[in-house]
Length: 216
Image 1 (cartoon, one colour):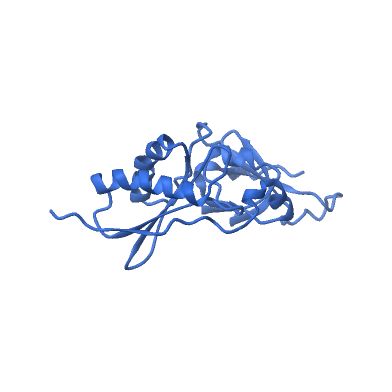
Image 2: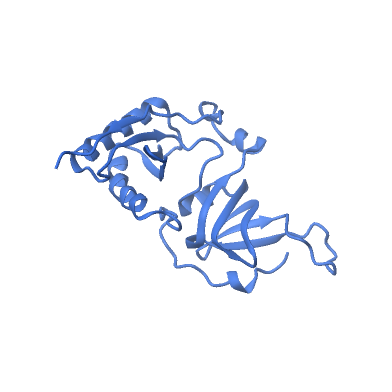
């Protein structure tokens, strides 16, 4: 097994398992996550990710789940109501938008340090903000966290011609803070690992709810 490239040897600072990826996130996404997290937790759920999309019509998507990683349409409605109560009062966005709440789905995004530990052994793909050793995209078997790095056994890495083991893998240590996006890849093993309630790739979506700018 090859050693990591020198560029990846510097460990990122150690953080709690609930630390969330922030690289590439807009200041508004990060501020909404900070506002939403205690609301979601008070309702009995965990916040996985906040994402802002849309062109003329902004869509603010909150992905949440229970501690046991289940989430159904009624749960989405519960989280949506809890968020709406506070967001209607505080108006943190200041323009029209659609509020959307969903479950992570099976091929879920990985956003917290604990996600990279909990789904160890599954196929994952990750993208960095900036290239390391000429690469931004990585795909392989997730091997947990080590000293602030996400460990991925990457079978696509070319093997040194002088190496005797043709099946040699490169294990990459990707700095947690440098990851822009990471998610599980749909496989039979991943589907089998889910409970019957979750054995569908379709996310449960709450009907978008219109918000309007408050009169000043």
